[in-house]
Length: 267
Image 1 (tube, rainbow, N blue to C red):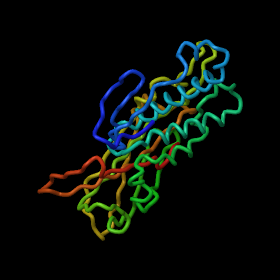
Image 2 (image 1 turned 90 degrees about the vertical axis):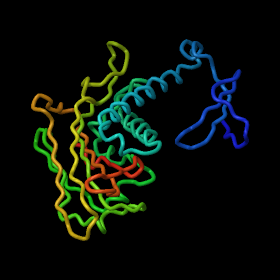
Image 3 (image 1 turned 180 degrees about the vertical axis):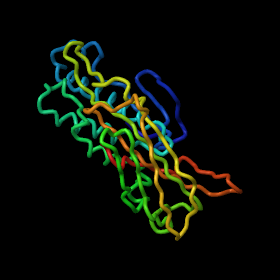
Image 4 (image 1 turned 135 degrees about the vertical axis):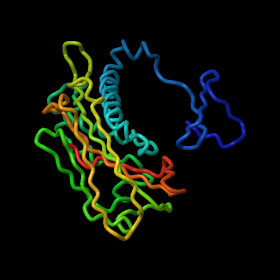
């Protein structure tokens, strides 16, 4: 694979040569097609190990999709190629399955919840380097109702953002996440609990002015009574912050890159 620096470029394929523009990297990418034929990979004994790796990697991608869909209501708080970090995490969790056979190992995120809080959703402005406070997370026994507190929050010294801003607000989401397991009957991977990625709630704080005066910030969210999280599922608690310039009156402007988020807890 190569990067095009000169004036000659095209989009699409010509023979075995492909060219495309990567909007995140801001570069034209030039590569040559190659590799074994698809049918050969599916049937040849020589590619048995490749098939096992492909099966597990596909499961990793599908589990990552569950994570993204669960947090989709805060998708504007992400920035850059953050999904690669989630894929890497999914593979790490998969390798920790000491009982499953190679090619069928499960992604049991409910057994390794604390690892999800290491995901970086904005490499340019990581949440931990923007918000100089570890939020307090309070949940009931069933994980149905969750509160995030930032008591006596001094925005002037506890928010570090390179761009100028006059106002800020927080957003909180709670979302349920299923493990992704291999079904030996159907011989395929599937969520252990189907449909959990659609169980999410998001709330926003009011807009606050940047100030040396402390604010007691508290956000609470609860799942509907009929959507009790399964005991072997994970409840993700995401917290985002966005910055804005007050243009006039109560009108605010906040660009997508002026936001960041983090999973502050996984229950």
